[in-house]
Image (tube, rainbow, N blue to C red; front, side):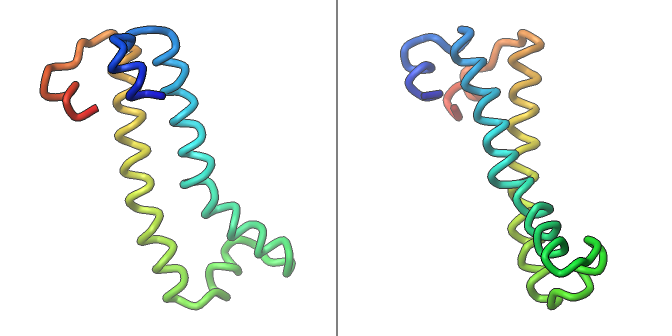
Length: 100
């Protein structure tokens, strides 16, 4: 939807803004919050705190989750910075618009 709105020249419309906020929220819930939830759910099933879960799960599993989580946090940060630019009203340069 973001690309379609952009191509229609609606990059500074309310719909584009609503779509951006929905994208950030869904990304955060589905790609970032899922990791702490996974550890909390595992802990709840076995009656463990989150710190006990981290100790109980094999190190390579924790490391793998961390390696998947780090890029997700980076991309979420970029999305939030882009949203801050939109809210502040700064116009994007031609190079930044081509990235979109």
